[in-house]
Image 1: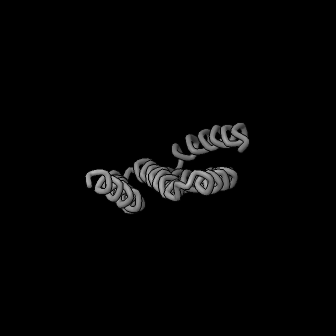
Image 2: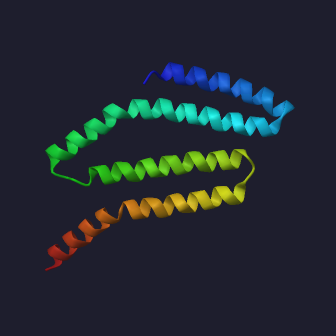
Image 3: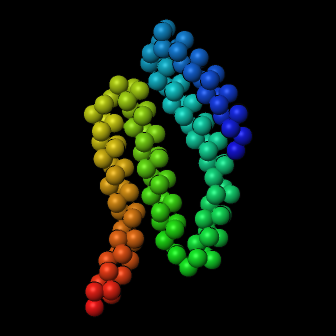
Length: 126
Protein backbone atom coordinates (compact mmCIF):
# COMPACT_ATOMS: atom_id res chain seq x y z
CA UNK A 1 0.00 0.00 0.00
CA UNK A 2 1.45 3.29 -0.99
CA UNK A 3 0.63 5.40 2.04
CA UNK A 4 1.67 8.60 0.30
CA UNK A 5 -0.99 8.12 -2.39
CA UNK A 6 -3.59 7.61 0.31
CA UNK A 7 -2.45 10.62 2.32
CA UNK A 8 -2.39 12.79 -0.81
CA UNK A 9 -5.88 11.64 -1.74
CA UNK A 10 -7.10 12.42 1.79
CA UNK A 11 -5.64 15.92 1.70
CA UNK A 12 -7.22 16.63 -1.69
CA UNK A 13 -10.53 15.24 -0.45
CA UNK A 14 -10.29 17.40 2.67
CA UNK A 15 -9.88 20.57 0.62
CA UNK A 16 -12.66 19.56 -1.77
CA UNK A 17 -15.05 18.69 1.05
CA UNK A 18 -14.28 21.88 2.97
CA UNK A 19 -15.09 24.04 -0.06
CA UNK A 20 -18.11 21.96 -1.03
CA UNK A 21 -19.54 22.10 2.51
CA UNK A 22 -19.64 25.91 2.34
CA UNK A 23 -21.68 25.96 -0.86
CA UNK A 24 -23.76 22.78 -0.72
CA UNK A 25 -23.63 20.67 2.45
CA UNK A 26 -25.81 17.94 0.93
CA UNK A 27 -23.33 17.24 -1.83
CA UNK A 28 -20.48 17.40 0.69
CA UNK A 29 -21.92 14.37 2.49
CA UNK A 30 -22.22 12.47 -0.79
CA UNK A 31 -18.68 13.44 -1.75
CA UNK A 32 -17.43 12.29 1.66
CA UNK A 33 -19.14 8.95 1.10
CA UNK A 34 -17.51 8.64 -2.32
CA UNK A 35 -14.09 9.50 -0.89
CA UNK A 36 -14.52 6.90 1.83
CA UNK A 37 -15.43 4.28 -0.76
CA UNK A 38 -12.29 5.07 -2.75
CA UNK A 39 -10.19 4.83 0.40
CA UNK A 40 -11.84 1.53 1.27
CA UNK A 41 -10.95 0.25 -2.19
CA UNK A 42 -7.29 1.24 -1.64
CA UNK A 43 -7.24 -0.55 1.70
CA UNK A 44 -8.94 -3.67 0.35
CA UNK A 45 -6.32 -3.85 -2.39
CA UNK A 46 -3.59 -3.70 0.24
CA UNK A 47 -5.17 -6.40 2.40
CA UNK A 48 -4.54 -9.20 -0.10
CA UNK A 49 -1.05 -10.03 1.21
CA UNK A 50 -2.24 -9.71 4.81
CA UNK A 51 -5.04 -12.20 4.22
CA UNK A 52 -2.60 -14.62 2.61
CA UNK A 53 -0.25 -14.27 5.56
CA UNK A 54 -3.05 -14.84 8.09
CA UNK A 55 -4.14 -17.96 6.21
CA UNK A 56 -0.58 -19.32 6.07
CA UNK A 57 0.02 -18.51 9.73
CA UNK A 58 -3.24 -20.19 10.66
CA UNK A 59 -2.26 -23.35 8.79
CA UNK A 60 1.22 -23.55 10.32
CA UNK A 61 0.20 -22.67 13.86
CA UNK A 62 -2.72 -25.06 14.05
CA UNK A 63 -4.89 -22.25 15.43
CA UNK A 64 -7.71 -22.37 12.92
CA UNK A 65 -9.56 -19.47 14.56
CA UNK A 66 -7.03 -16.83 13.56
CA UNK A 67 -9.28 -15.98 10.62
CA UNK A 68 -12.14 -15.49 13.07
CA UNK A 69 -10.12 -12.90 14.98
CA UNK A 70 -9.27 -11.15 11.72
CA UNK A 71 -12.94 -11.19 10.68
CA UNK A 72 -13.98 -9.61 13.99
CA UNK A 73 -11.39 -6.86 13.58
CA UNK A 74 -12.57 -6.21 10.01
CA UNK A 75 -16.19 -5.98 11.17
CA UNK A 76 -15.23 -3.50 13.88
CA UNK A 77 -13.29 -1.33 11.43
CA UNK A 78 -16.10 -1.33 8.87
CA UNK A 79 -18.71 -0.48 11.50
CA UNK A 80 -16.52 2.36 12.77
CA UNK A 81 -16.18 3.74 9.24
CA UNK A 82 -19.94 3.71 8.67
CA UNK A 83 -20.54 5.20 12.11
CA UNK A 84 -18.14 8.04 11.29
CA UNK A 85 -20.01 8.70 8.04
CA UNK A 86 -23.30 8.83 9.93
CA UNK A 87 -21.82 11.27 12.43
CA UNK A 88 -20.47 13.39 9.56
CA UNK A 89 -23.97 13.55 8.09
CA UNK A 90 -25.37 14.61 11.47
CA UNK A 91 -27.28 11.38 12.05
CA UNK A 92 -26.17 10.60 15.60
CA UNK A 93 -29.05 8.21 16.35
CA UNK A 94 -28.23 6.17 13.26
CA UNK A 95 -24.55 6.25 14.19
CA UNK A 96 -25.40 4.79 17.58
CA UNK A 97 -27.37 1.95 16.01
CA UNK A 98 -24.50 1.25 13.60
CA UNK A 99 -22.18 1.01 16.59
CA UNK A 100 -24.55 -1.39 18.32
CA UNK A 101 -24.91 -3.51 15.18
CA UNK A 102 -21.13 -3.63 14.83
CA UNK A 103 -20.69 -4.80 18.41
CA UNK A 104 -23.31 -7.52 17.98
CA UNK A 105 -21.70 -8.62 14.71
CA UNK A 106 -18.28 -8.85 16.39
CA UNK A 107 -19.77 -10.94 19.19
CA UNK A 108 -21.43 -13.25 16.67
CA UNK A 109 -18.21 -13.57 14.67
CA UNK A 110 -16.29 -14.40 17.86
CA UNK A 111 -18.71 -17.12 19.00
CA UNK A 112 -16.46 -19.95 17.77
CA UNK A 113 -13.67 -18.55 19.94
CA UNK A 114 -15.95 -18.44 22.97
CA UNK A 115 -16.94 -22.04 22.31
CA UNK A 116 -13.30 -23.18 22.13
CA UNK A 117 -12.45 -21.20 25.26
CA UNK A 118 -15.38 -22.68 27.18
CA UNK A 119 -14.51 -26.21 26.07
CA UNK A 120 -10.88 -25.70 27.09
CA UNK A 121 -11.83 -24.33 30.51
CA UNK A 122 -14.24 -27.20 31.14
CA UNK A 123 -11.57 -29.72 30.13
CA UNK A 124 -9.09 -28.13 32.55
CA UNK A 125 -11.60 -28.20 35.41
CA UNK A 126 -12.29 -31.92 35.00
